[in-house]
Length: 414
Image (cartoon, rainbow, N blue to C red; front, side):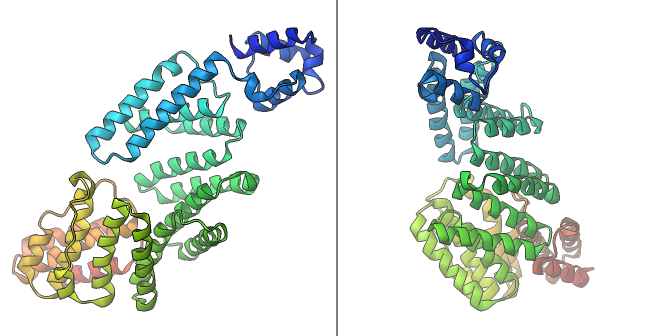
């Protein structure tokens, strides 16, 4: 029995006419179309019909198909949790396919009509999996999903969809386009503020902070950062705090602000010990090297500082290790140990998933350091190759200390 049939049965059981159930918020014609499956009611219409019938809207929607959808939703959420805990690419790609295979029949049979939160969420997951598996990478459908979430009053989820759209632009290094998407999302915060969760607001403000920083709008980045930290403190939540601390830490290192950098690296150490997350620990290790090189400038200490990375699969730290090698290579270069610096830097490359200018410039700096080492050892050909690659890589990126370092290296070598 579908929803329309159930409404008709309940109306007749109560010996009510179409006009009585329609009341003053629906026409008899529209109610008739709903009962005969020729029109889909909005959530507001369903709530009105349920009130007229004297039942809760959840009872009205408890059809066999609804129960089936809810069971599917539970299965999908369990698979999504498994993906969040999986770091090996081959395994999580298979989980993507499993999710798609699970939802696909319901899409093809037209069972995901967008009438309930679960239906919209399942359809969104279906679209995301098709994107990640590179079956369909178009993004227009996400705007339809935003409208679906608005109809079922899932306003927090709207922000999540906008964030996903921004990430797609960010991955193309279209930073201003990504920022435009997030500013559009902020309009929903203004419109539905009291109906949007704190965590979703923190996500949004963090992403806006990062995007403004990417295009050198530092004052605006700081404004959104302050907004987010104010919310976190008022609501006494630690969600995203470590992300904000890391952002501030790197910013103060760039400014060579010893006091502030020390304050935030201590915050990061404390927060990481609370979170007990392997990824957080891994990032903390990298920032520790960053701090020693940038603030303490104790390069012997840098090369003497080693970490245990056995707690994570190789797939997790393979790309991030380029940052580690860059920090060790920098320390060896500063100590004049050029051969050892080259040993650290010989396998550096630009990982696919690093897209923020701060990360990119830091990686290109490693090529400049390698060029300087080649130069000191008399290998001018390789020195020119690496420094030209670094200069070209940073030409469209924001101005940072590392970009200045690269240009100074270029002047020395060329």
